Image 1 (cartoon, chains in turn green, cyan):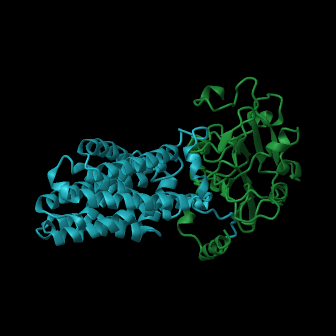
Image 2 (image 1 turned 45 degrees about the vertical axis):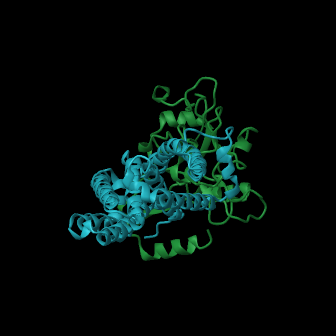
Image 3 (image 1 turned 120 degrees about the horizontal axis):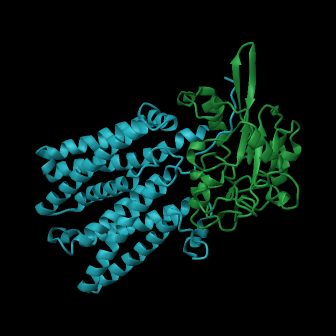
Length: 233
Length: 284
């Protein structure tokens, strides 16, 4: 893949550097939401916003229907548009590891990074939080940087009961993620944006990963739910 | 039925559209004030145009700062250790501040009747004023994932919209046949340029892939249809061009009617372009 590198910020395939990635095997995801819960607990993520979330779609025709889960999180892109968009360098990429992180004290709250993210992975923290005093700045998944540098895996990966989420260094040919990405058919979300996302999905359905025409005519119940949901944000 | 997703908010709300509108007028009004040093017909609006520009610049700046969730940290934009020049917002912040400083200096020199320095500052300020709509356009253009925004048209469209809205405001304070004739020309040509760019924008959006196509649907027959097509294009662009082309449009009252419609259109277009680029992704 290194021959596809076009920007000096990209670190995939660079010798001597780590490039962490996550593989999500959708065949193993049972939609238990344990990853969301672990993430919420790890970071005191406030109500109404998510660092990771698990949307689903009901697919098939009765009686052979099933729920297709698609766990979502920051894709820790190799060429992240959010880093470019931030006017004050509050969003940055860790060279060794590829984590996209935030300098919370620098963030001015202009939301340019949120506008630039094709994955809706960023959110604004509310005015009040229960245990944490970081408020009114943009936040997102950090790939559990604080855990990974201590040799642990992210909280969502550790808690995943089906071992659907696998985490590791893609630049290490002996890692499980390298093995999976090189041997399995994987998809990334919105590859057409050229962001080079580092969350890979096994068994993703295009009907689920792409924006469908159905949104043009959303059901009334969805819109009333959206209005109720936004009341608290 | 039975699908579930987290609801995402649009990052940039309608207040940004008000900022784009206000700052566009401010830039054009400064330009007209600067033009007065080189075109005699504009002399009569030299001071009023500048005052309007300055008040709108101050108001727009405050609006922008107020829209930040950490308003006091707008000072970070001036910290060289923090500035990220890959972001158009950083350039925009510097452009805005330098335009403000030049505006203050221009005011002082005008008060002192220092014609030579005023002329120089007018040229410098006009160049910085031109930068304002250009940077606001770039603010949108650089987001590769956003339909409507991610087109090279945006900075040029915002310059045309700025000139159009500014000329419309100037019509209300203009005196003298020559000046009115000039402003009518400005309005006609900039509205014509906006109309041509909108046709191009609609074409590329309609044929730009599934996300763009959906955005096109939202902006024409969907929730934004009345604002974009109705107010923005029909009421705010086509109708004033038609009025300006008639005999009535050559009189000051006709020009004022067209100017009012252009202002409505300018605001509606900015709003629908801003929101249009964000609707589809809020469902992803």
